[in-house]
Image 1 (cartoon, one colour):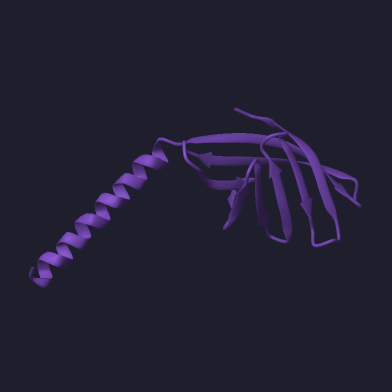
Image 2 (cartoon, helix red, strand yellow):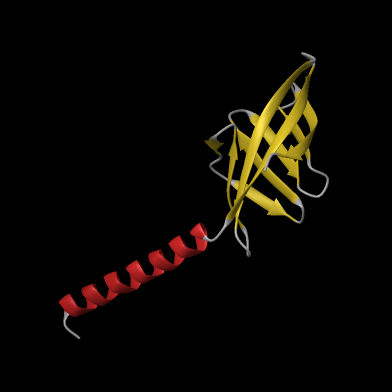
Length: 115
């Protein structure tokens, strides 16, 4: 097969794959939580908004207060991630939030679905 036809074939394959991914993402759902998190030692409470984008197979994206996290890991019912200097564990089974600022402060709270 000539090089031009191979390149065209590769581009057609890549576009078909992207179209499939776009359909999968568009058929997904977003779950929104409002989490009342109490931070210690400051003893302040902040309401944090969590959005979990998923489809039937996996979690696609996580946003906290509208900011997309760069990386996350799913381990059974837990979603582990970090935002700025805060390490965060979201428990989807108990709808709870646990976080830690590298040992300097911590946060814990309950979440409820906002949608």
